[in-house]
Length: 404
Image 1 (cartoon, rainbow, N blue to C red):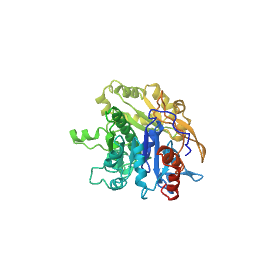
Image 2: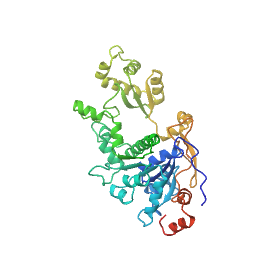
Image 3: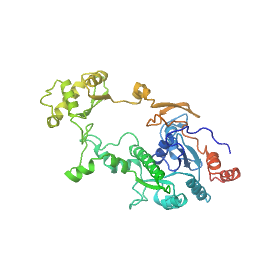
Image 4: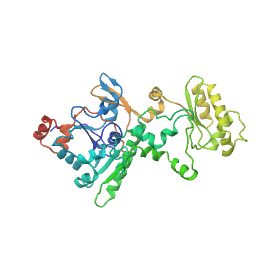
């Protein structure tokens, strides 16, 4: 077999082996984040059709762009999970891996031998990440789930929007993305635990799609428990805010400016800039009582000025403010450039493409982006031959039989 030489060149997760039996966003994003940090990740897909994420979103010249990012830094191996030969290959992949990611329904997980008991029996050191709509131990364990459902159940969507309008989902796959992020954190924590365990025992991470956002809206449970309140939508402000001024305001040149006061002192700085009475509005209670008055004055003040002028004056007054960026602003922004947050990556179909860097930045052993999303089954020889040790004849037989 001929090994594909290109691969991760370092990173804090170098040497960690991940196999993901996962489709679309949440599970695969966890794998991608780990791959960005140097892990060797195999993305298992059905032969012929592949992951449905390959066809999500806009395309250029027939090549779907989202996949180039979501599938980056990983190996694509095809496997017909329903074939008679699949069980042997699934077991060998689990034996190979440090981390196994699954996102099927509970009964499907069990049928494919990817439940905790099966994985732990095959590889006691493996970390199993199981992502599902409602959690493995609930009465809805076998029900399908998508990120928008998780967002709705988390409490977040109820809080998003204006009081006189409907609840609003954010403009991207928020629930899936945050689940992928929390999953990568959880897997990394489990790997640390395993490294310190005398028998290198693995772990079972059971993550429901609503739980990450539910955890991040961290004050909603205790407020309901102790005060009996149900926080409501407050537009661009916050239902629970650190200080009296948080909002988004339209400027004279039809841009939007966001302003945040995290402390009473910051509110005083805003009040002074607006020409209001700083002595009367010096403490938190007075600022909270005058919130609507301050907000209206700030709205008018920004409406009378171009965004750049308003932001410059606010920043000079030691107030945190920014234009609301669109993607064109991000592409032209010098701070993004100084951070190196956008990188250029060669792509077999589109030449060079730009995408987010491997984040967060590790300064001594950084992650990297070494490939865009692989072609379907591009790494079958590497995975089944070099990594799992199957003979060339056996790989050819599996390919001819449509198993891979």
